[in-house]
Each structure stands twice: as structure tokens, then as C-alpha cells.
Amino acid sequence: MGTEKSKGFTLYSLSGHVTNPGQFEAPLGITLRELLEISGGVRKGHKLKFWTPGGSSTPIFTDAHLDVPLDYEGVAAAGSMLGTKALQIFDETTCIVRAVLRWTEFYKHESCGKCTPCREGTWWLVQVLKDLEAGRGTEADLDKLLDLCDNIMGRSFCALADGAASPIISSLKYFRQEYLDHLAIGGCPFDPAAATLFENVGAK
Image (cartoon, rainbow, N blue to C red):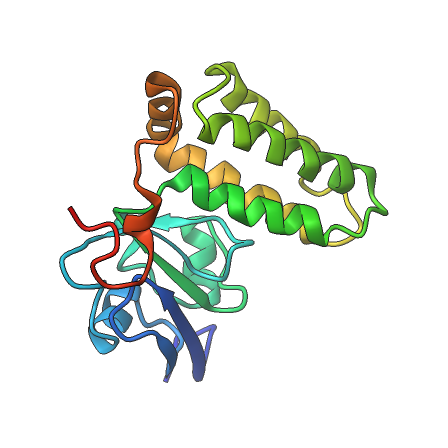
């Protein structure tokens, strides 16, 4: 079982907006589409927006990546990493800017402070993302984010800084317009309550 270069079985963790979250033992090379069939699909009445193939430190994927083989070479070829195999599932109620900001706040908090690019870089990433989520700033701030990420990636002693930058870079690749929408209306167009896992909360 598995694939030619990634043999055998492994555990995939599905969490977030999925009907039956949990740990699933499956052969390497299975796709998210197949895992969602096993786990009951995205929560009822909603559709997949984006997901992480290997936890929050890996570049995000979208619904266009449902059939990417979840093995090491397949995920890498598609532009991300299998990492911890922690597949976080997000539906269309989730604000990408808010999600990325929350992850970045975590990495800022976890930075030990030894490396200047990580210590200062994660702090600045949080400040820029906060402004963008609130609808402040300009389109130039999107390029500022990418510039900050470029100065962080590969310039720290451990992989924490890379993990902070990766989801930001990929979110701008796939959802740049959503960032611009925040600036256009002067705030977040999403209802945070609608993205919670509590039934009927935020329902309209």
C-alpha cells in the first residue's frame, strides 16, 4: 500500500469544518476528497474553501487541490508539505485574513527571540495583518507582507519563521482579492460567529 516512494499507511488528522473530525489511518497517497468521503464531508450546508495538508506551518491548499495525492512527493509537487499530516479544513464562512492572522500570532508568541528575522519579522507580520483585517492600510501592504516573508524565510536557526511565512505567502497567492475586499469596505466582510463549530451560531 502507499505509493512508490511513500510506502505504507499513516495517520491523517482531520479537524475544523468537517462532519466527523478525528484521526484516520489510511495509505499514503490518499486524497483529501477520499478522506472527506470517509469522514462525512465538509459540515452540512457548506463547501470547502481552503485547507492545510500538514498543519498551519505549511502552505495552504484550496478546493482545487482535492485530488492531490497526500504523500510526500505529491504534496511537494503541488507546492506544500505533508508535515504533520494535520489537515485543517475551512469552509466558505472563514475569513482567510483572520485565519492567517491567528496563526501568525501563535508563531510570534512561540518565537524564542534568538533570531532577529524571526523575532522582529513575526512581530511586524502581526501588525500588518491586524491592519489589513481591520480594513486599514493600502494595497501596498500586501507587497509589504511578501517582502517581510522573503526576509524571514530561510534566515532563522529553526523552521518556526518559515512556518509563519508559508501560509501568508500561499494565502496571498490564492486569496489576494479577499485581502483587497477588506480594504475596499474598511473592515472584515465575514461574520466570525458563522465560522464557529456551534450549530446555528451565526446562521442567518
